[in-house]
Length: 456
Image (cartoon, rainbow, N blue to C red; front, top):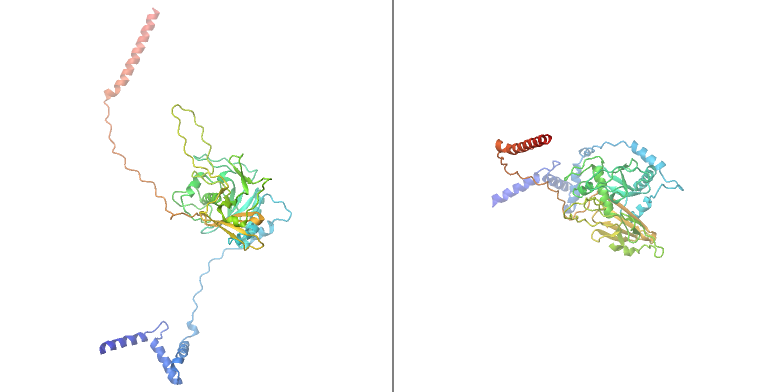
């Protein structure tokens, strides 16, 4: 027992004498504190031990020992001269002049942003005003009939500001490429509007190309974040037919078809048009009246403004090809997917509705947020009959299950063993030729003999 106690005491003493990071051990610190107590003749040793311990620790600190860590390396600062020049030109030369007639319809983005801010979604005020001025400049430059801020698509290196506009009336119609599934023409279906993209509202806008059915079909099979560079390749499987600008245009078409909403009853379908167009509801006997704010909590109070997209990558089926009449049984007509017409009520599973009355002035803001496309929102102020849509997100939809990349096509099986065909003997192979030659010769001789007999 004595040996065990002695070993424990030695271990405890060695632990107390172990120096710390500053070279001082607990044993030495306690020794210094006790020596100070004895020198000063402290009567309340327990009450003064903490103060003496702190004082003893302070005597070992020197300002020279407190070395500040090196400053982090500063990233190279980009040249801001160009940014200041373009922003200055945007702020001074493109502001709408009071009394000036606009080239077309341009919603007041500044006012709409206040509505979105009441719903908890918006951009900074300075950024909103720069985008508003940039849209005004773009509309005047391109002579667009209408333009609105579609939203902001976030990227890994840069973000895209997206503008949605109507095609200019005098624009030349480009010849569409011939494809298995025809492309929808300008002003119809997925190409109802033209879209512009830019990384900086003070910079230049780039018009995105028309969306093709094969691109829409391929976009639904991949998951790819945007880089912010329109000419960047889209590395994914299955391969996407185009670069990032085509992929961006395809995703915009999918978002617009699924998330642009309006209050039910505000618009109607023009039945005489083909394809059907959406027009403002007009009825002198029963004009449209915005519903009460509380009614906007029901999904039936909201409708999708645009056509839905079919599996073939179009909003409407292409006209059937002209079939030539052939003998025999008639061919079976393929079963076509039902078209999703505009002004279809939304589903409560895909949207979350909310009514906010903290905007003040008795103007309640009704909000519908997309669950399928996070970042898409529609806000209405029924007291003012105002409605606005915006999207701020990564351009990806919510999936019901984890995304799984499609496997490559199955490997072709090995062909069957090739059996060499036995060659026909030459004599047997020449029999049909010899018979045909004898028949032709006999026919010639007979004809000559008949001709000679007729002459005699």
